[in-house]
Length: 391
Ligand code: DHB
Image (cartoon, rainbow, N blue to C red; front, side, top):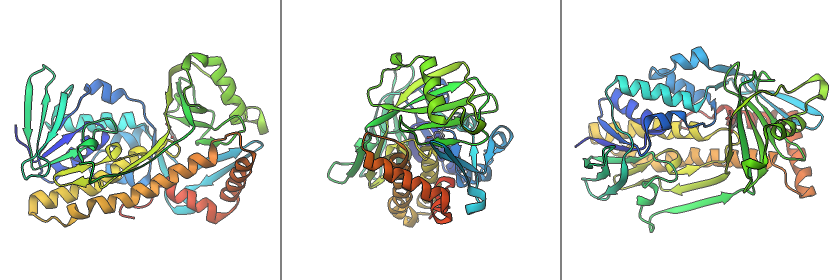
């Protein structure tokens, strides 16, 4: 098989890249280790920045998002006894949309299928070869176990932090920065109407809690828990009791309505950046190059921003033999990656509690500054609602 762009990974980054390339007449083939059903059922965050929404709209992928998603003007930030609303639209002119990554992936999958995109799902033993020549290629076993070879002009790794692409950058060329956080999130999906109109980010001495949502009938909530937490120790009743305590059930007339929990998981939290995001004929996008902790929901938005830069760069490189955007891709993308890496670290460390009393006072002071000062609020709002593409 031969194509212009061999894409490793059919998550949102790989699917969106193939969509943008096809719109400009560039051919691609996607190789994905999981099944389509698995990829489309993976539960991820659910907040889209305004630039993500604009991009999806501009390439015909926004219809269901506007029908079924929910536009939010801002968030609530709270600590015991106080809840403040930050209005991003007033502060920055930009809103966010609540629409699950799972739904974005389904919309992309449907659009690519309608367009006849070739995607090899359930591929095994995917390996990248000859990336520093003009003739890179992939080898893999297809879903039937047959060996396959895919020749291309360039390879793009959209295969997340455990895929083979990241490691295909020669060790002498790459620099990695990372941070592990001493806590995790316990996340639930529940069949109950959200108890709030917009998301609540709650600092609490027992640990952070977040009330998010997926629709008018499905809530998504998170609790800070110690790393290594065993789900078996958290009964549904214990989870709802901790959420009620940390989110302020009974305070100022607000109450949290519990409901049947349909999914429970523990999410690790770490920051990771690998530079450069290009090595010869290999380009990295999304989680293959960087991981952020979930606070602030930047993972998907950052992957979309990478792809929004990479698609025109590949169109110019392969369609017009103009390498300027491709040569600038890594440095340009990493500017936004580090902005979001800082923002996600900042939200995480401002909101998650440990045993250090000095740190707690600093966190509360920081939260008060964000809630009470327009400058503080605007800084959070600008990052949360998303800086313009190309910032
Ligand atoms: C969600 C996840 C986040 O990390 C966040 O900051 C907001 C919302 C979510 O899954 O809905």
